[in-house]
Length: 106
Image (cartoon, rainbow, N blue to C red; front, side, top):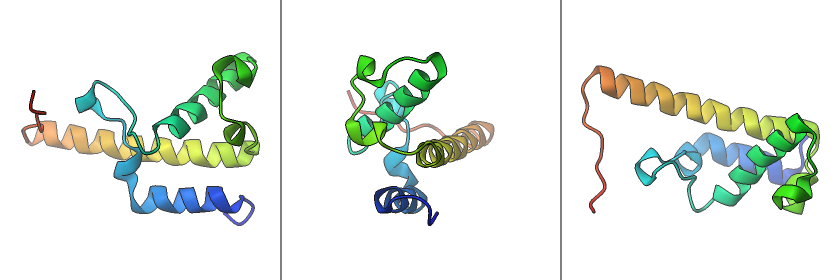
């Protein structure tokens, strides 16, 4: 992790200690959390831009996300994937054990 800028190092540590802050909220219809939503969306958009060879400005990606090195971007995306896999495991285990889901009050 030493090769990453301080901001990325700090964010990776935060993702380790507080993964719930980076969790895709199924109860809200599939929204990213307010605290980190824009950053997460821009990380995913950058991935998509790289995949289809689209300019980052087309999707209005924050300059700070554009300036991440390939390695920094990959580390953040890998950590997000790890968090989501953990969430999937929790979801599946809860279904298997018939644990009721939390319902939001209307």
